[in-house]
Image 1 (spheres, rainbow, N blue to C red):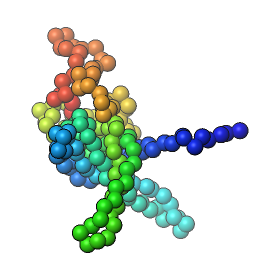
Image 2: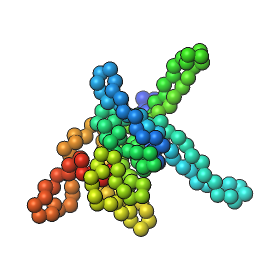
Image 3: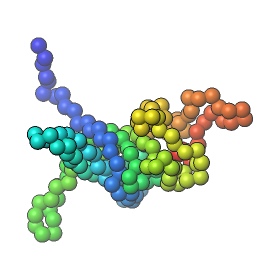
Image 4: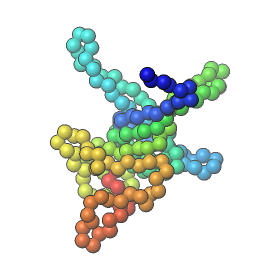
Length: 177
């Protein structure tokens, strides 16, 4: 028999989609950075008449601290990203007296996808090695770094053997996305 305790709760969201607008970076009064951006996810299905259909869903994403910095530097409109986070709905009274609502996903982890067209972008534009996706156009998990909210930036190290004379540490400026 399965028993669920009243104190057991889970608020977890995973979205994999394309960035709909470049991240907007700002600072809170405390000085902490916050980035806001959108992601579109698509659902493909066949209706009762046998016609192929597509629905898009739009998600508001908010990232804080190091994730905000990384999002603002490496995410651009059209880029693929996987966000893991929690759902938060805020409400407020509008100037017109109507109660307003906004549902957001507060990012806890983000995983960068390949750049559209395979070209690097953002502040890492000096990176010259183009991304080449496998034949099925899905990147291998080991090719896309997972960046967690509280991960120190010096924890990004390569699992490959460095070439002669090269360091085995990755400089964040060399990340191709």
